[in-house]
View 1 (tube, helix red, strand yellow):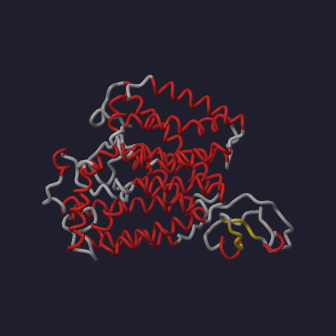
View 2 (cartoon, helix red, strand yellow):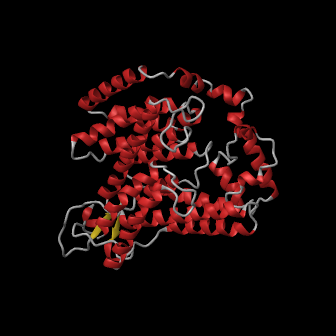
View 3 (cartoon, helix red, strand yellow):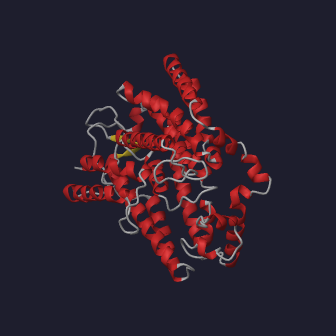
Length: 434
């Protein structure tokens, strides 16, 4: 039943990452992703009742719950209580998402299936963008994007997936050649799509992914190197058929936008206002989701465009809104994620590092702490070392051990406590295995 519930949750993973269709102003149930999540939650609940087991939450969930609790407590001193309630509600939904994936994703092949779903989500976003381009549907100032996604966010969403798509090709090869080709080609398709967004900060945040891809080209088998070269040439030829003059002109002003008074498109003024507000309330903050209200009295450039005055910086947003207490809790979550990634096996570790680095760099110029993609990726990073591998069977009379990530752990003491089924395939005691 757990495996069936996981399969039902896969469409929710897709929708949470790539589908931003808002059909109602309702905060409770106003997006397609939340509707898709209903059957996933229902099947998850049924699987818990049927099996009588639920995987024990780990420290990530403890800190996340404390962070949500502190954000809810900020309602009492928030300068915008209504917005605080809305953000805390979203946090609660994301906490449920992390719990569900933690409980249902038990094995490496399931984690790989979730990653493959993200690659498909990336192709969906790219197809949506190319369709909008073909129809001349501009998202913002001669810039194109996918349905419901801001042009600045789309390159980062691509960049997070790109290293993981190649990890599936080389470190966890798929059974079919079709999936390997699709995964190999994804960075090329995504890069062409990024150019159409003309997002300067988005492209900069993807540098860790590009570095990883450059490193991985040295590991290519000659046959795959040739295949990638053909795909790259095809991608370049395709890009020449697009009218990218205005987008490339904007991208070329990355340095000028910082050094010649633009202030990173007005972000410097927004950050300065937030830092000043933090100095007034350093411990408790202005209240979750109250950054815009707290900085309303400042002469900020973004007001001229009518764009919401959110922080455009995840770390500053958490610091100003929830104070030092909330920031330390959020920082603790990120430290736990970093520790998990450090324990992944080395061939895969670089892909996870690159993916997480894209998210971390992207957080410098965007506000991501209340985005579903953030918590979806963070729990996948944690799961990277907390899933069971397939291992050979040894003498049944010996003490049975199994692999949890890169570590050997005793089944009776650890896996049973986590609610994980005892696999019939296990290693003997580490002394024997060595």
